[in-house]
Image 1 (cartoon, rainbow, N blue to C red):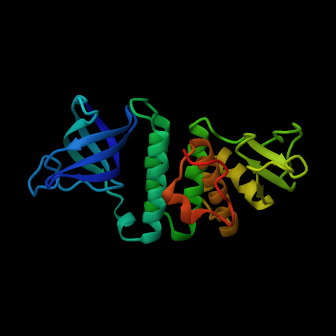
Image 2 (cartoon, rainbow, N blue to C red):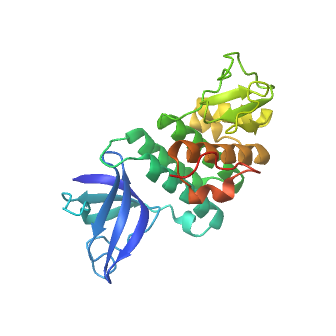
Length: 257
């Protein structure tokens, strides 16, 4: 099978080989065995590298659950990711979240395309827009996964939540709550008017329009942190790459599974 694939993780296996997690449109997240990947001469046209888009040829799954990787050719290297710590950190968010949301043997082409697009944005965007690129990816990825928050009405009373209203974001209730409706709701977190406006903006308007300008830094950090907490709640796991992005006190609201 020939397919495009993003390298999400690489683990050494013996002296010359590696077990690699690939993100694909057709097969979701696939763990492959790259035999001889660390030899100077191999069939992979150079060493495999995290965060690179390859065209790969895969074999049939073996008894240990791994898929043999027969060959690879780099299509997009996203070279600035490896020379800029801020870009590399943002790319790690994309790769880790996509790895959790892309399931093995389940085609999710939209999420794969979003991941590739987001890496291009992080690689090429001016530095002030990196936060906007991360927020855009997180909001769209949450939506594509089926776990997206409802952002128009209060999940408790059903009344509309206006742009200037004091609001809470509650993963347990599936969306927004008026402050009055969210009293005593342990999983809810405050959402400022600027944060709500940004979250609605990146969730609904075309990506190119979102990326035309930089989001207010404080609002971008707030939304990143809230989406981090949201994902950790619904996925019941810790997301290591999101830890530096959490805004203020946004504690994990459910024990990690």
